[in-house]
Image (cartoon, rainbow, N blue to C red; front, side, top):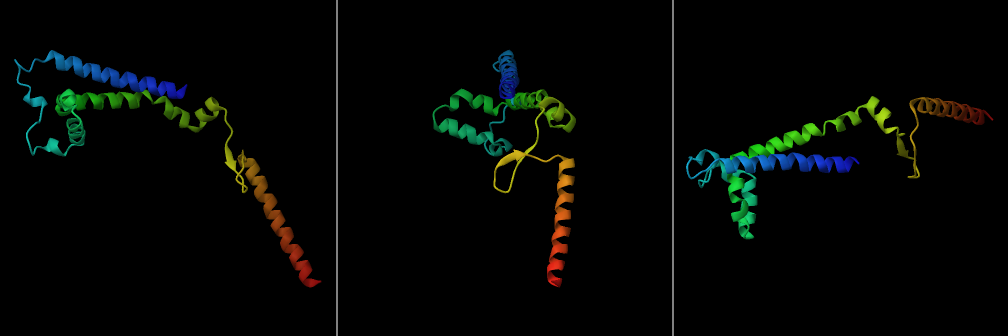
Length: 154
């Protein structure tokens, strides 16, 4: 259920962002309007240091560069991808609620687990049980010290 929700939200956010980018790109006719503001194609520009330059070189080496080269150099593409990533993060906000202790206990109804010294999975002790165990171990230690003292005198 949770993985499916994550996949659907991811597809929705990036699908909406990419379709909006394609629609806006189609609306502007670069033959009639100067689109140089959207592109940075000059050699030695700051764009040469951007991470997508690696992707553009890889696509060019494999004969696919003509398909997405314009997108990788279009600043609007990166703005819409940023928009999609932000929407994706905001739509996954309910996962934060699952991490809060009151909601986690209410929504998941799961008990904590842990491993014992032998490496077996077992239920974790509650706070009350940990206090009882600590006092029990302390009393055993006191009894052992007393028994050691008694053996030293005999």
